[in-house]
Amino acid sequence: AQSAEVEDAFGPARWIHEAQVRSLVESFLRGLAPLDRELLALRFHQGLSQRDVSDRLGLGRQVVRTRELAIRRELLAFLRERGELGLV
Image (tube, rainbow, N blue to C red; front, side):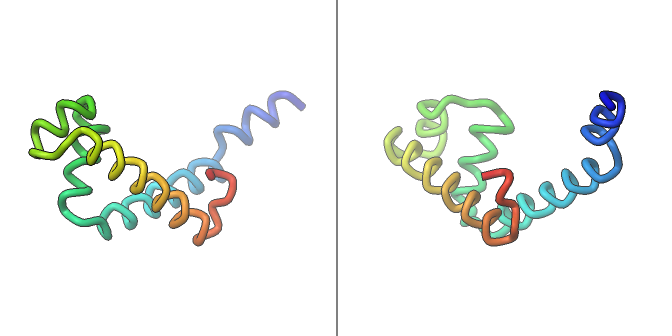
C-alpha cells in the first residue's frame, strides 16, 4: 500500500496537476500590472529583500510589503475561483 501512495504522490496525475497550476499562475502573472510583475520577479526570482526591491523600484518599503501582500491575496482568490481550493 505504501508504494501505491508513493506512486500517487509522484505519478502522472500529480505532474499534470502541477502543470495546470503552473499554467494558472502564469496566466495570473500575465494579468498583473508591469510594476507588480517586476516586484515579484525581484523578490522571488532574484531573491531580493523587500528593502532592496524598494530601493530598486524607488518605492517605500511599506509600499512593497503592502503590494506583495495584496498580490498574494489576489493570487489565492484567482486560484480559488478556478477550483484550486487545495492550494489555498
